[in-house]
Image (cartoon, rainbow, N blue to C red; front, side, top):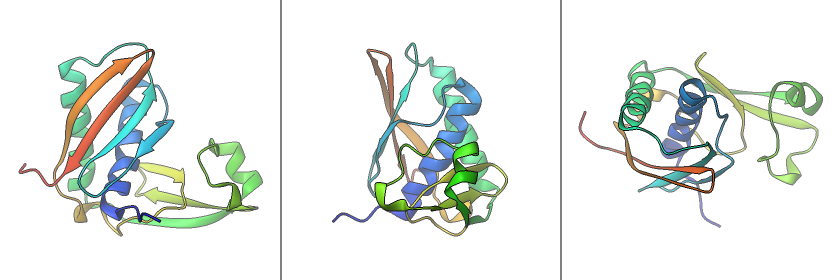
Length: 146
């Protein structure tokens, strides 16, 4: 079984919140997270303009630079269902849901590993985008010079 990289997984959480705030399309419905490169798919009606890509990168890097704490707490499933879409959680999650918080910037149910602070992430870059049949794909990496 492949282990998800905590840095990239935390970056995914920040990206998802940035995308929802800027584009209003919610969190990704599909993601492939790896140490070297990752991707997220969103339901969105058209390709992104270059200024949207630049704004998303800038927002993710702003949150990384804030060095926010990354914490988690447990909630009863019934409480979490009223606040979050639980569709991407593993079936074996049960009646208690783990909610990961990136400072006061993002909160999301998640069973994966994360870093303890956003400052542990390196510079974020969107390395590619494409759009097909209402699906916007964003590819990203960490570790680029600022």
